[in-house]
Image 1 (cartoon, rainbow, N blue to C red):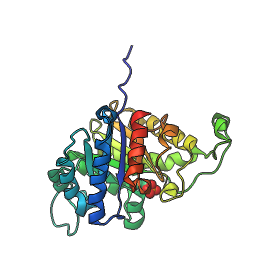
Image 2 (cartoon, helix red, strand yellow):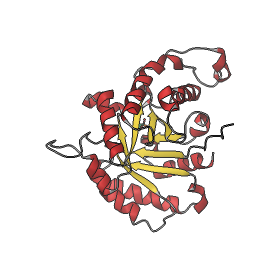
Image 3 (cartoon, protein in one colour):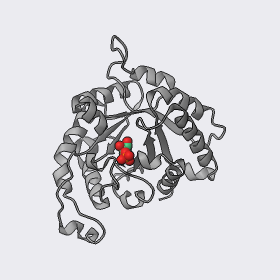
Image 4 (tube, helix red, strand yellow):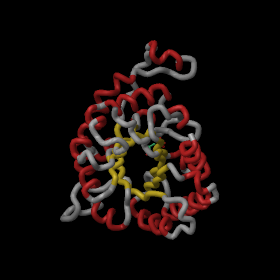
Length: 280
Ligand SMILES: O=C[C@H](O)COP(=O)(O)O
């Protein structure tokens, strides 16, 4: 009889995208550290927290985290993008090797905004994920369908009908499967990968995608052969797209945590969300 898989650690983080000034990022991090250090020490024992500031602010954020007087709050610093080569004549690009050198632990890749504004493809994203992994940085790869799927009323999802609309998860899976397979082919199975499921139509929206839909898609991603063959605990799945306080409890059957944007801009709201995930 095989022993049960160890539980995956919960995970929650924020990308500040390009919203904050340098000064605001510094204030944000010090406020966050203060709020977290006021919590009972055991509260954050079983959760990983990450922050992804802009590239210019990253080393300052890393110093703030290292100099934090309260070591009870280990926050992983990360970057929002990097190039797929480590060094060379690539003017203006950011080296994943340099990111690793300064203490970057997580590298976000393939965000919908990178795909949309900078033409990044699955192939480019996969090469960047491989570059992160070979430099010892955890790739956090954003995947998600561009178009909102049609509303359905399948019997398996009927219990949610009175709460929120039920979307056809099956319709989104082919697009997501291609994105996930491209990345996991490029990264060794024994390297940790974080998949952030972010339906593109739910990013920057007023509200997240419906909970039953997110859980169905996340469970389907976990069932992909390229995910199942990886060692237990090495592939965590987050939900992102207008995520904030009050959401994780509804998604906990599908995801390991949340990836926040705007609704973490207020550090108190971010800490509220962290606590919900840590204690759910
Ligand atoms: O990186 C975070 C996601 O794109 C979500 O952003 P949002 O919560 O502002 O929609």
